[in-house]
Image 1 (tube, rainbow, N blue to C red):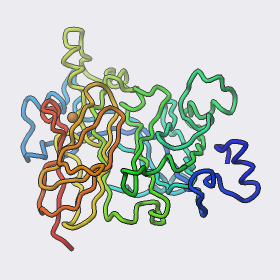
Image 2 (image 1 turned 90 degrees about the vertical axis):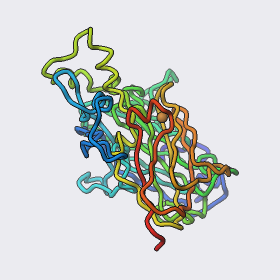
Image 3 (image 1 turned 120 degrees about the vertical axis):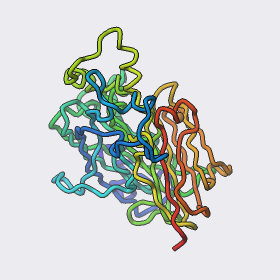
Length: 367
Ligand SMILES: [Cu+2]
């Protein structure tokens, strides 16, 4: 329990969990997640078509997805977090949501728990895991800072290829839902060795913290039937850790006169790493209590306005069918769909629609 300080360590020694400092609760558990960083040739458009409209790609869309002598196309070399069932790292955990794509596995905890992340670096680049929201000491921040620390407190900063590091994160009251939240909130975790390059390369995942007493055994909220995770981000492949490798593989690497167009073609306006409606459709039934966890990361272009056709959501007590994201923010939107059908689900920023930040979801008849 290295993440706790000397005071809480003393409390544990007399049989009190660290959570007693927060919500005065018992039965806290340690939730262990086995996560590997793995490289992958990721296809942003595996269907090979514009799926929101059911059409072939037009010339404007081909800019982003069509490979050429000096264009990468829709398949980029990336590195992402993959969940495994145990320390053998042989059996993958099932995705919480089939639309999750490039995202890392969902890390879950209830307020009062401890999170343990065993991060195995199976990639060729240094990685880390930096969480938002939860409690961590300097040996579990997953980021290098000019903080005066040395030795063991720096091992979390950079997990080298082939190495494994275990992060311990606490889940006090202040990591969980606040007065205006529902039964769960979502945070991001991401690699922070070179934060910009790491996240554009794919090292991002969601973490859900459920209120005390509101969690199922797996940590998911009791009052929700289905949860979906949507990461709206212009993944900038020009910032990728693997850009030089990918350029080297092109038959005719772009020259200086082609640089601007080449860079434009590498701006992947994606949801969960999918463009132009290629994301597997989230599916639900009318009447379900559906919770959408919506997130972004990035730059000044990452001002997104996710929009659901057909149904509305409640977010922080406000009724909406469009919600607002700024870089590195997250939000929760609850939906009880009543309109059955296949519906558009897209960013409402015009440039982003044109560049592929679109998807669909499906509401099936009530069970
Ligand atoms: Cu957008």
